[in-house]
Length: 346
Image (tube, rainbow, N blue to C red):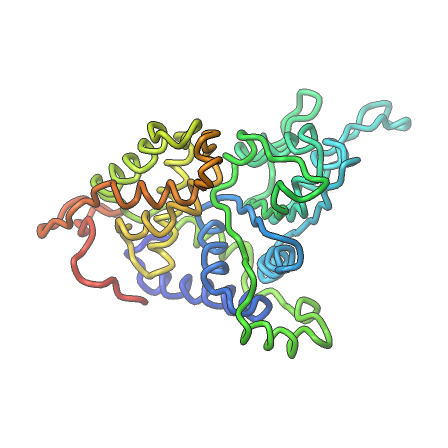
């Protein structure tokens, strides 16, 4: 098990992240914050929802992340006629063995790319619920474990687009974070013309990390220390969404857990063995906003869930940094709850 007391291992793992980041950024120009959030979700054992208008590189981002890691990758094109069994698999009668044989579906991969997930019917969308939460699939009473690491990277067009089905609340809650790629800057778009004008960079993209290295990274993230005031701060932020007058549905306890895991992954990406309130703040909109349902009055006033989360961040008191050492790390030694000095990178 990788621990933060092993500085050489932590440095090696940080180098792995840098290789993956450089590989993805070589395909997605001008969007370093989007790439960083994608890696954060990967290390936090979550799933990523990429939502934006067509043509901004949603699928390109998902493919670049998947191809940068030497692991099994499957792509599912969600269409209105897609069936749940196409995703999970189906049991077929074998005449020779005179028994049913299970044929795994596309979900049996370490990185699953769901393209335009909201173009499939809600019945088909629900086929992902068990696999995303429990990392297993149950067919005809038999449970099949999914490989590890396991991550679903789904893309979707805004629900106002023609031919889309809004994701149900239970499905959105399975995704740790939602990110919008957005239009590139003029400089990034000009560079894109030079890079993508001839051959797609995806064709030459080679894996720069192995699945075993990603598993070690995930294990290291689990050991990141989160002080009690930081945990309480995350709970207060999520609880505020449940009582806000502009929301008819607040964030779930699963959202609190996802926010904490993402904060720990952000700390690890910064070379720290402890999470800060800043880590929670930086991820609050991406982790919480897609789970919230504004009231009808808020929608009439053009209030978005993102604006509500920003308001909650402004109103919720941030815990003050203590001067003394408090808490214990993964190996039992004292670590600061959150230091007053800027964290150093490894």
